[in-house]
Length: 249
Length: 250
Image (cartoon, rainbow over all chains, first blue to last red; front, side, top):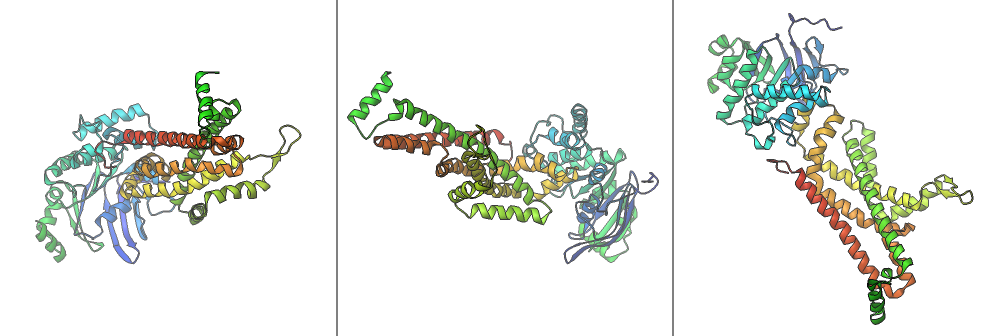
């Protein structure tokens, strides 16, 4: 029986270890995310940020530790992956839209094919989502006909169509040019304001500062320092954090 | 007798090497028609089943089970590394001995799988082994990240295979699939070896009846195969155009 309530963390990560062969990427990561919270994970390349949120969605398996989404253990061979993925939406750096389907079909596919929902109802929802990501008029464009920023917003809408409770964003602006970054960030900001729980891996420090409730700095597989953006950016204690921030800001 | 038939009778008189006997002799005409009928039937069935074999094999190759992967690998090695004609003889003469028989007329015992049946099975498996490799190359060309996106949307392996990977894979491997299927259609002539009454078999029968018809039957064979293969090539490129995705490289 799942006795999870909204007062407990919606996402609870405890002492997670993850290796790719010999290489240990995560060396005991622990943190909690409450419902409606927006957290940003920052850190140098190769520090395990992306791996961490991929583990939350069970795209990567972990070797030890515990990841609980709404009280359900992800690190469990008997995990109902579909149930997990209904709750957790994920957006990737390379958008990964299905190139043979139009924008609106991309959004509608999973709810119809995986959740077996009524196509008419899904289509209505898809139109609302397209409006939400400000892409009216692009419904019938193929991904190849859209700009990077537009594709990424369709990818966000595609994840939202599954009506998840948590959204994971894996460096979603890293492949975009500076002008289109903004339009994607606005979309996420809207989401955060609607109360969606968001975990972002990002290099956009300004954005992290503005949107995050909590910031985690990772380096070499551990969380070095964390805190609310106000104190995190002005009052970093650890030398590694200081060095990283001085290079970036 | 029509003018058309009259013309070829006179042609055979004046040019004995060009005896188009199947244009004016009822028996020979029906041989050729049967031959074309069998060649087309054999082609359609083997093309269909070889694609099915290819898809199932490619699906099994991506399986977690080592046994399934090894089975597919063994299957590919066996059928790719031996001549199709030898396979055909093996299936019909060796395996054919062990199949149960039945007696439709109450007198004669006949095996439940006819020579035509064996030709379909053997040629489908032969071309299927190539199709597995063709589909595998197409599947591998679909980025892993696309598969992960499907996975993160809750697609299981079968759903993502049929709804996302195959439609993309198919577009990538259509040209090489087309090559293999064209080869298969031409290989159906080898069913002659186990007396399937396809076009080559019938043409040789016509030639045996009328040795003057050699040039005429050879010409006919070339033209019929040229047209059948041409039709496949044309429909394949039409399909390729139809499946083209705006703004997508393949």
